[in-house]
Length: 70
Image 1: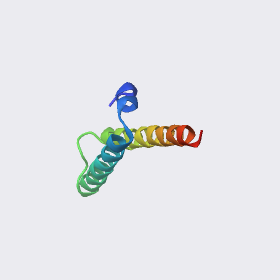
Image 2: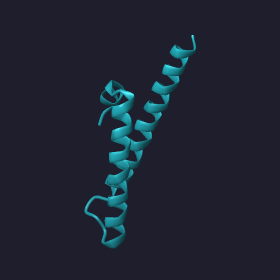
Image 3: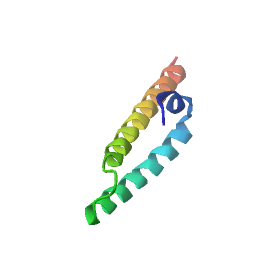
């Protein structure tokens, strides 16, 4: 998922996507612990995607607070 796609999501969609990706991350970690997965870089990519989603979510929440506060 590219950054412009992430920026286009609203807060509810970001929360859903974070939950989905965290579940996917746990499954990847578990699968890799049992037997090495074909592409272990997928674990790193998923972790970074979760971080980007959380960063955008925090940014949008702060933006909403500023609008509501003024």
